[in-house]
Length: 396
Image (tube, rainbow, N blue to C red):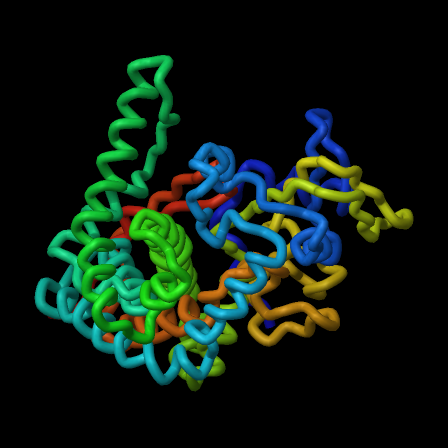
Protein backbone atom coordinates (compact mmCIF):
# COMPACT_ATOMS: atom_id res chain seq x y z
CA UNK A 1 0.00 0.00 0.00
CA UNK A 2 1.23 3.48 -0.87
CA UNK A 3 0.46 6.75 0.83
CA UNK A 4 1.03 10.35 -0.25
CA UNK A 5 3.53 11.59 -2.78
CA UNK A 6 6.30 14.15 -2.42
CA UNK A 7 5.07 17.59 -1.38
CA UNK A 8 8.21 19.55 -2.22
CA UNK A 9 9.23 19.65 -5.85
CA UNK A 10 12.57 21.29 -6.51
CA UNK A 11 13.33 22.77 -9.91
CA UNK A 12 15.90 20.12 -10.81
CA UNK A 13 13.63 17.16 -10.01
CA UNK A 14 12.44 16.30 -13.49
CA UNK A 15 15.80 17.04 -15.10
CA UNK A 16 17.67 14.78 -12.67
CA UNK A 17 15.35 11.82 -13.01
CA UNK A 18 15.05 11.91 -16.78
CA UNK A 19 18.80 11.57 -17.41
CA UNK A 20 21.25 8.74 -17.02
CA UNK A 21 22.62 7.96 -13.55
CA UNK A 22 25.98 9.65 -14.29
CA UNK A 23 26.57 12.36 -16.84
CA UNK A 24 28.81 15.35 -17.45
CA UNK A 25 26.90 18.62 -17.68
CA UNK A 26 27.61 21.35 -20.23
CA UNK A 27 29.31 23.38 -17.47
CA UNK A 28 31.77 20.57 -16.79
CA UNK A 29 30.13 19.52 -13.52
CA UNK A 30 29.38 15.81 -13.25
CA UNK A 31 25.77 15.04 -12.31
CA UNK A 32 25.10 11.86 -10.35
CA UNK A 33 21.46 10.94 -9.72
CA UNK A 34 21.45 7.13 -9.46
CA UNK A 35 21.42 5.59 -5.98
CA UNK A 36 24.32 3.16 -6.36
CA UNK A 37 26.38 5.75 -8.20
CA UNK A 38 25.69 8.47 -5.64
CA UNK A 39 26.57 6.17 -2.76
CA UNK A 40 29.83 5.23 -4.48
CA UNK A 41 30.80 8.91 -4.79
CA UNK A 42 29.98 9.66 -1.15
CA UNK A 43 31.84 6.60 0.12
CA UNK A 44 34.93 7.17 -1.99
CA UNK A 45 38.14 8.24 -0.27
CA UNK A 46 39.22 9.81 -3.57
CA UNK A 47 36.89 12.78 -3.10
CA UNK A 48 36.83 15.79 -0.78
CA UNK A 49 34.12 18.19 0.32
CA UNK A 50 33.00 20.87 -2.12
CA UNK A 51 30.20 23.36 -1.54
CA UNK A 52 28.60 23.96 1.88
CA UNK A 53 30.74 27.09 2.23
CA UNK A 54 34.06 25.28 1.76
CA UNK A 55 35.40 28.22 -0.26
CA UNK A 56 35.07 30.51 2.77
CA UNK A 57 36.64 27.96 5.12
CA UNK A 58 39.66 27.55 2.84
CA UNK A 59 40.44 31.25 3.38
CA UNK A 60 40.90 30.76 7.14
CA UNK A 61 44.46 31.04 8.52
CA UNK A 62 46.43 27.83 8.00
CA UNK A 63 47.02 27.42 11.74
CA UNK A 64 43.29 27.31 12.53
CA UNK A 65 41.80 23.83 12.60
CA UNK A 66 38.89 23.41 10.19
CA UNK A 67 35.53 22.17 11.50
CA UNK A 68 35.10 18.43 10.98
CA UNK A 69 32.58 18.99 8.17
CA UNK A 70 35.36 20.52 6.07
CA UNK A 71 38.12 18.01 6.75
CA UNK A 72 38.95 14.83 4.88
CA UNK A 73 41.43 11.99 5.09
CA UNK A 74 42.96 10.24 8.12
CA UNK A 75 42.54 13.23 10.47
CA UNK A 76 38.84 13.42 9.69
CA UNK A 77 38.35 9.67 10.10
CA UNK A 78 40.12 9.70 13.47
CA UNK A 79 37.96 12.60 14.71
CA UNK A 80 34.81 10.77 13.66
CA UNK A 81 36.01 7.61 15.39
CA UNK A 82 36.65 9.44 18.65
CA UNK A 83 33.34 11.32 18.66
CA UNK A 84 31.17 8.40 17.51
CA UNK A 85 30.35 7.57 21.14
CA UNK A 86 28.25 10.74 21.43
CA UNK A 87 25.88 9.52 18.72
CA UNK A 88 25.37 5.78 19.21
CA UNK A 89 21.74 4.58 19.37
CA UNK A 90 22.27 3.41 22.96
CA UNK A 91 23.63 6.76 24.09
CA UNK A 92 20.88 8.64 22.27
CA UNK A 93 18.29 6.55 24.09
CA UNK A 94 19.92 6.67 27.52
CA UNK A 95 21.27 10.24 27.59
CA UNK A 96 19.13 12.36 25.30
CA UNK A 97 15.66 10.81 25.35
CA UNK A 98 14.83 12.47 28.67
CA UNK A 99 15.87 15.87 27.28
CA UNK A 100 13.76 15.32 24.17
CA UNK A 101 10.67 14.38 26.19
CA UNK A 102 11.07 17.30 28.59
CA UNK A 103 11.51 19.89 25.85
CA UNK A 104 8.77 18.42 23.64
CA UNK A 105 6.30 18.52 26.53
CA UNK A 106 7.27 22.11 27.34
CA UNK A 107 6.78 23.23 23.74
CA UNK A 108 3.47 21.42 23.36
CA UNK A 109 2.38 23.00 26.62
CA UNK A 110 2.39 26.29 24.71
CA UNK A 111 -0.10 24.85 22.24
CA UNK A 112 -2.33 23.58 25.04
CA UNK A 113 -2.24 26.94 26.81
CA UNK A 114 -2.81 29.18 23.79
CA UNK A 115 -4.69 26.73 21.59
CA UNK A 116 -2.50 27.76 18.66
CA UNK A 117 1.20 27.94 17.74
CA UNK A 118 3.64 28.13 14.84
CA UNK A 119 5.11 24.70 14.22
CA UNK A 120 8.48 26.06 13.04
CA UNK A 121 8.92 27.86 16.37
CA UNK A 122 8.09 24.78 18.44
CA UNK A 123 10.36 22.50 16.44
CA UNK A 124 13.27 24.95 16.46
CA UNK A 125 13.14 25.24 20.25
CA UNK A 126 13.24 21.45 20.46
CA UNK A 127 16.13 21.11 18.02
CA UNK A 128 18.15 23.81 19.80
CA UNK A 129 17.75 22.27 23.26
CA UNK A 130 18.63 18.77 22.11
CA UNK A 131 21.65 19.81 20.04
CA UNK A 132 22.88 22.09 22.84
CA UNK A 133 22.78 19.14 25.23
CA UNK A 134 24.87 17.00 22.89
CA UNK A 135 27.37 19.76 22.11
CA UNK A 136 27.62 21.13 25.64
CA UNK A 137 26.12 24.60 25.14
CA UNK A 138 24.45 24.48 28.54
CA UNK A 139 25.60 27.78 30.04
CA UNK A 140 24.15 30.05 27.36
CA UNK A 141 22.69 33.42 28.16
CA UNK A 142 19.00 33.90 27.32
CA UNK A 143 18.24 34.40 23.63
CA UNK A 144 20.12 31.55 21.95
CA UNK A 145 17.28 31.01 19.51
CA UNK A 146 17.36 34.63 18.38
CA UNK A 147 21.14 34.52 17.96
CA UNK A 148 20.97 31.37 15.86
CA UNK A 149 18.17 32.76 13.71
CA UNK A 150 20.37 35.77 12.96
CA UNK A 151 23.24 33.45 12.11
CA UNK A 152 21.10 31.29 9.80
CA UNK A 153 18.77 33.82 8.11
CA UNK A 154 16.25 32.78 5.49
CA UNK A 155 18.12 34.86 2.90
CA UNK A 156 21.90 34.92 2.70
CA UNK A 157 24.04 37.61 1.12
CA UNK A 158 27.64 37.29 -0.07
CA UNK A 159 30.22 38.88 2.25
CA UNK A 160 32.94 40.94 0.60
CA UNK A 161 34.78 44.26 0.47
CA UNK A 162 33.99 45.39 -3.07
CA UNK A 163 30.42 46.62 -2.57
CA UNK A 164 28.15 48.05 0.11
CA UNK A 165 26.13 44.84 -0.06
CA UNK A 166 29.23 42.72 0.54
CA UNK A 167 30.46 44.94 3.38
CA UNK A 168 27.02 44.78 5.02
CA UNK A 169 27.02 40.98 4.97
CA UNK A 170 30.66 40.78 6.08
CA UNK A 171 29.93 42.95 9.12
CA UNK A 172 26.71 41.07 9.84
CA UNK A 173 28.47 37.72 9.64
CA UNK A 174 31.25 38.79 11.99
CA UNK A 175 28.83 40.35 14.50
CA UNK A 176 26.76 37.17 14.53
CA UNK A 177 29.86 35.02 15.11
CA UNK A 178 30.81 37.29 18.00
CA UNK A 179 27.34 37.13 19.55
CA UNK A 180 27.29 33.34 19.57
CA UNK A 181 30.84 33.19 20.87
CA UNK A 182 30.29 35.61 23.76
CA UNK A 183 26.85 34.39 24.84
CA UNK A 184 27.05 30.65 24.17
CA UNK A 185 30.47 29.22 23.42
CA UNK A 186 32.71 31.16 25.81
CA UNK A 187 30.57 30.43 28.91
CA UNK A 188 30.50 26.72 28.01
CA UNK A 189 34.26 26.61 27.43
CA UNK A 190 35.00 28.41 30.69
CA UNK A 191 32.82 25.99 32.66
CA UNK A 192 34.60 22.99 31.14
CA UNK A 193 38.18 24.19 31.40
CA UNK A 194 38.04 23.59 35.14
CA UNK A 195 35.89 20.47 35.05
CA UNK A 196 35.29 18.38 31.96
CA UNK A 197 31.90 16.88 31.20
CA UNK A 198 30.77 14.10 28.92
CA UNK A 199 30.02 16.24 25.88
CA UNK A 200 31.52 17.40 22.60
CA UNK A 201 33.02 20.67 23.89
CA UNK A 202 34.92 18.80 26.62
CA UNK A 203 36.25 16.41 23.99
CA UNK A 204 37.41 19.32 21.82
CA UNK A 205 39.18 20.89 24.80
CA UNK A 206 40.96 17.59 25.42
CA UNK A 207 42.13 17.72 21.81
CA UNK A 208 43.66 21.14 22.43
CA UNK A 209 41.18 23.17 20.40
CA UNK A 210 41.07 26.92 20.93
CA UNK A 211 37.83 28.71 21.78
CA UNK A 212 37.64 29.99 18.20
CA UNK A 213 37.98 26.48 16.79
CA UNK A 214 35.31 25.24 19.18
CA UNK A 215 33.04 28.05 17.97
CA UNK A 216 33.43 26.77 14.40
CA UNK A 217 32.58 23.22 15.42
CA UNK A 218 29.56 24.37 17.44
CA UNK A 219 28.14 26.36 14.53
CA UNK A 220 28.71 23.44 12.17
CA UNK A 221 26.75 21.16 14.49
CA UNK A 222 24.11 23.87 14.92
CA UNK A 223 23.53 24.01 11.19
CA UNK A 224 23.49 20.23 10.86
CA UNK A 225 21.58 19.38 14.01
CA UNK A 226 19.22 22.27 14.62
CA UNK A 227 18.26 23.79 11.30
CA UNK A 228 17.79 20.54 9.36
CA UNK A 229 15.84 18.83 12.15
CA UNK A 230 13.42 21.75 12.30
CA UNK A 231 12.67 21.34 8.59
CA UNK A 232 12.18 17.59 8.83
CA UNK A 233 9.76 17.89 11.75
CA UNK A 234 7.73 20.36 9.71
CA UNK A 235 7.63 18.30 6.52
CA UNK A 236 6.77 15.10 8.41
CA UNK A 237 3.94 16.87 10.24
CA UNK A 238 2.67 18.27 6.93
CA UNK A 239 2.44 14.77 5.47
CA UNK A 240 0.68 13.41 8.55
CA UNK A 241 -1.78 16.31 8.80
CA UNK A 242 -2.84 15.86 5.17
CA UNK A 243 -3.01 12.06 4.91
CA UNK A 244 -5.54 10.45 7.24
CA UNK A 245 -4.48 6.90 6.38
CA UNK A 246 -0.81 7.63 7.02
CA UNK A 247 -1.64 9.43 10.27
CA UNK A 248 -3.78 6.50 11.37
CA UNK A 249 -0.89 4.13 10.76
CA UNK A 250 1.50 6.41 12.64
CA UNK A 251 -0.80 6.79 15.64
CA UNK A 252 -1.51 3.07 15.88
CA UNK A 253 2.13 1.97 15.62
CA UNK A 254 4.69 1.35 18.35
CA UNK A 255 7.91 3.38 18.32
CA UNK A 256 9.73 1.23 15.71
CA UNK A 257 6.64 1.39 13.50
CA UNK A 258 6.40 5.17 13.82
CA UNK A 259 10.08 5.52 13.05
CA UNK A 260 9.59 3.42 9.90
CA UNK A 261 7.01 5.98 8.76
CA UNK A 262 9.41 8.84 9.47
CA UNK A 263 12.24 7.07 7.65
CA UNK A 264 10.11 6.75 4.55
CA UNK A 265 9.02 10.40 4.66
CA UNK A 266 12.66 11.44 4.94
CA UNK A 267 13.66 9.20 2.03
CA UNK A 268 11.12 10.99 -0.12
CA UNK A 269 11.78 14.48 1.29
CA UNK A 270 15.51 14.76 2.12
CA UNK A 271 16.14 18.11 3.79
CA UNK A 272 19.44 18.50 1.95
CA UNK A 273 18.84 17.48 -1.63
CA UNK A 274 22.33 17.92 -3.05
CA UNK A 275 25.92 17.36 -1.94
CA UNK A 276 29.08 18.28 -3.81
CA UNK A 277 32.42 16.54 -3.94
CA UNK A 278 35.66 17.15 -5.82
CA UNK A 279 37.69 14.18 -7.00
CA UNK A 280 41.33 13.82 -5.97
CA UNK A 281 41.91 10.84 -8.26
CA UNK A 282 40.10 9.27 -11.20
CA UNK A 283 36.84 7.82 -9.91
CA UNK A 284 35.16 4.84 -11.57
CA UNK A 285 31.39 4.66 -11.17
CA UNK A 286 28.91 2.02 -12.35
CA UNK A 287 26.75 3.20 -15.24
CA UNK A 288 23.96 1.85 -17.42
CA UNK A 289 26.41 1.15 -20.24
CA UNK A 290 29.40 0.10 -18.16
CA UNK A 291 31.90 1.90 -15.97
CA UNK A 292 32.02 5.70 -16.16
CA UNK A 293 35.33 7.35 -15.25
CA UNK A 294 35.18 10.77 -13.60
CA UNK A 295 38.59 12.47 -13.98
CA UNK A 296 40.80 13.86 -11.24
CA UNK A 297 39.86 17.37 -10.10
CA UNK A 298 36.27 17.15 -11.32
CA UNK A 299 33.38 18.72 -9.45
CA UNK A 300 30.63 16.17 -8.77
CA UNK A 301 27.06 17.18 -7.95
CA UNK A 302 25.35 14.35 -6.06
CA UNK A 303 21.56 14.59 -6.40
CA UNK A 304 20.31 12.88 -3.24
CA UNK A 305 16.68 13.61 -3.97
CA UNK A 306 16.77 11.81 -7.31
CA UNK A 307 18.92 8.99 -5.95
CA UNK A 308 16.33 8.34 -3.25
CA UNK A 309 13.65 7.63 -5.86
CA UNK A 310 15.83 5.34 -7.98
CA UNK A 311 13.52 2.36 -8.57
CA UNK A 312 16.51 0.07 -9.10
CA UNK A 313 17.24 0.43 -5.38
CA UNK A 314 14.02 1.45 -3.60
CA UNK A 315 11.60 -0.65 -5.64
CA UNK A 316 8.23 0.02 -7.22
CA UNK A 317 6.41 3.32 -6.91
CA UNK A 318 9.40 5.16 -5.46
CA UNK A 319 7.47 8.42 -5.53
CA UNK A 320 5.02 7.19 -2.86
CA UNK A 321 5.40 6.76 0.89
CA UNK A 322 5.51 3.01 1.62
CA UNK A 323 6.93 2.31 5.09
CA UNK A 324 8.84 -0.97 5.17
CA UNK A 325 9.26 -1.06 1.39
CA UNK A 326 11.65 -3.78 0.14
CA UNK A 327 15.04 -2.30 -0.68
CA UNK A 328 18.06 -3.49 -2.59
CA UNK A 329 20.80 -5.07 -0.51
CA UNK A 330 22.81 -2.50 1.42
CA UNK A 331 20.30 0.33 1.06
CA UNK A 332 19.07 2.12 4.17
CA UNK A 333 15.46 3.01 4.94
CA UNK A 334 16.14 6.75 4.55
CA UNK A 335 18.11 6.27 1.35
CA UNK A 336 20.93 8.79 1.23
CA UNK A 337 19.08 11.48 3.18
CA UNK A 338 21.83 11.46 5.83
CA UNK A 339 24.58 11.07 3.25
CA UNK A 340 27.00 8.13 3.18
CA UNK A 341 30.65 7.41 3.73
CA UNK A 342 33.09 9.49 5.79
CA UNK A 343 30.78 12.50 6.00
CA UNK A 344 27.55 10.65 6.77
CA UNK A 345 25.54 12.63 9.33
CA UNK A 346 26.51 11.35 12.80
CA UNK A 347 23.31 12.66 14.38
CA UNK A 348 20.86 10.55 12.37
CA UNK A 349 19.53 8.65 15.41
CA UNK A 350 19.11 11.90 17.35
CA UNK A 351 17.15 13.60 14.57
CA UNK A 352 14.75 10.71 14.04
CA UNK A 353 14.10 10.02 17.72
CA UNK A 354 13.45 13.65 18.65
CA UNK A 355 11.13 13.99 15.66
CA UNK A 356 9.12 10.96 16.78
CA UNK A 357 9.00 12.04 20.41
CA UNK A 358 7.68 15.44 19.38
CA UNK A 359 5.22 14.33 16.69
CA UNK A 360 3.77 11.39 18.62
CA UNK A 361 2.87 13.83 21.39
CA UNK A 362 1.70 16.54 19.01
CA UNK A 363 -0.78 14.18 17.36
CA UNK A 364 -2.03 13.03 20.76
CA UNK A 365 -3.29 16.54 21.56
CA UNK A 366 -7.11 16.76 21.57
CA UNK A 367 -8.51 18.17 18.35
CA UNK A 368 -5.08 18.91 16.88
CA UNK A 369 -5.26 20.21 13.32
CA UNK A 370 -3.24 22.21 10.84
CA UNK A 371 -4.85 25.64 10.61
CA UNK A 372 -2.41 27.01 8.03
CA UNK A 373 -0.20 24.93 5.72
CA UNK A 374 3.47 25.89 5.42
CA UNK A 375 4.94 28.02 2.69
CA UNK A 376 7.93 26.50 0.92
CA UNK A 377 11.23 28.28 0.33
CA UNK A 378 14.48 26.94 -1.05
CA UNK A 379 18.20 27.11 -0.36
CA UNK A 380 19.56 26.53 -3.84
CA UNK A 381 23.17 26.06 -2.73
CA UNK A 382 22.30 22.76 -1.01
CA UNK A 383 19.06 21.91 -2.82
CA UNK A 384 17.36 22.32 0.55
CA UNK A 385 13.92 23.51 1.57
CA UNK A 386 12.51 25.72 4.32
CA UNK A 387 8.96 25.45 5.63
CA UNK A 388 7.50 28.47 7.38
CA UNK A 389 4.05 29.63 8.40
CA UNK A 390 2.51 26.29 9.43
CA UNK A 391 0.08 26.98 12.27
CA UNK A 392 -1.38 24.23 14.43
CA UNK A 393 -4.45 24.44 16.65
CA UNK A 394 -5.95 22.25 19.33
CA UNK A 395 -8.75 22.47 21.87
CA UNK A 396 -7.28 24.52 24.72
